[in-house]
Length: 243
Ligand SMILES: NC(=O)c1ccc[n+]([C@@H]2O[C@H](COP(=O)([O-])OP(=O)(O)OC[C@H]3O[C@@H](n4cnc5c(N)ncnc54)[C@H](OP(=O)(O)O)[C@@H]3O)[C@@H](O)[C@H]2O)c1
Image: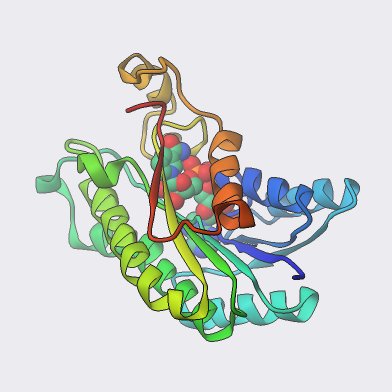
């Protein structure tokens, strides 16, 4: 099979690490981004310099037309999409639920859940038998993220429900659907939440006593997409240092 992957939100962090790892494993990859074109282009350049195939594509994946354009562009460049990583996720400033406004809640849901729904739907319409999807959820789906981001946690629990439900529907086409649930990973997302040093602060609470690296999550994603995980579907894999 010609392995072709779309990784949403791959201009930095876990998405960028996943794009590079998949490319090094022979996938042609679409590096989706929303705003940071320079960083997405840099990911593509690094992949191409190592002999891989990659394309950067700007699309706000919470929007239906953008998702259709993303799949069209990837198919045009590389052929049918065989792997999808729903990696996009945002969190906003740490806050109690009582202080959140409805615009914030709606934005987080649209970016994290609507994007997952739209990309999964497009993949189910186009993917050949034997493809695979990984949804990047979070430890937050288990904890609920009190005092920080209950909206974000709820969005990740919704993604887990899509993983479970779609895994059964997609099995008819031998398409596997799984999720990873990272814990505290060293990326810039924590600065967006207002606390750049969050991973360091929380590391003592992790059984392995450290935060994770983006590449450690990417390896779990790569394994779930690969034939090595051929009998794994509907599973949620915690990548959280034992938390
Ligand atoms: N880091 C952690 O500790 C942690 C823990 C658990 C789960 N996760 C999950 O892991 C995933 C990746 O996290 P990360 O820490 O690597 O995040 P990150 O560094 O903030 O990167 C987020 C990526 O998503 C893109 N993006 C955001 N909104 C988008 C949209 N509407 N359409 C297309 N792209 C969009 C960004 O693109 P631009 O740069 O172009 O805007 C960026 O490439 C997220 O789902 C996150 O919830 C992370």
